[in-house]
Length: 273
Image: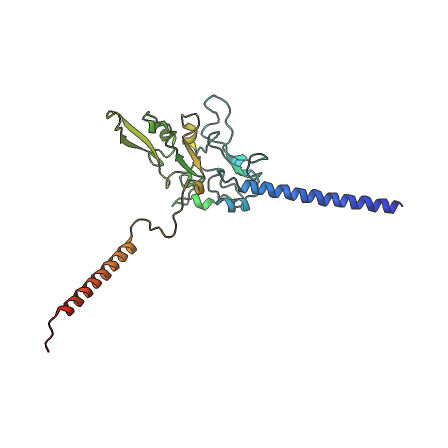
């Protein structure tokens, strides 16, 4: 009898364990799908593309520990500044244990020695990608994201003079420049419009934090979301191949015209019998 009871308890415990494991698997699967469906996340400097980053990151937190914003440890109101990088936890809609940052809270302060990158033990932060010609770490080579200006919200496009994002940019007059435009409505004033240059912008988010509007009119998005991709059928610019194609077309056109002319002359030529 005791053996039968023990067997029933064993089977019940086993089924409970299997059920809990299955439930856990379903919950984790749902969580993973939710995270993958939320691509608007900014990673540390030199992070691999998102899918590769998630596979490589071992969630050790060393990058976040190294991120201390060495230029200053105080906010404008005198409160202690936390590091830029946070480690995702439940409810953040990001893969738990992975590093990220929110520019409106704490942007990347572009440390010269980029302390967060060399400590990464897994290669999720690709140090060679931010080395300059001298093989030195260069934070200006980082591509954390790309700043995007929402023109309808930016007060500079209303005609109000504002250069907050321009002055906050650590690569001033390169990553963000001010474009002069005449105000046709008044004829007296001018627009000074912020223009972001994608080949220079690092996505640090200092411009986003500095924006004076209640909700930033300039904000950083991951590169994949901030930029479009032209189709294979689209010819970008004009190069030697394009020139050769036109030249070939002209030669064909000239040859066809010559053939038409020769045919016309042949048809109209007088024939002696």
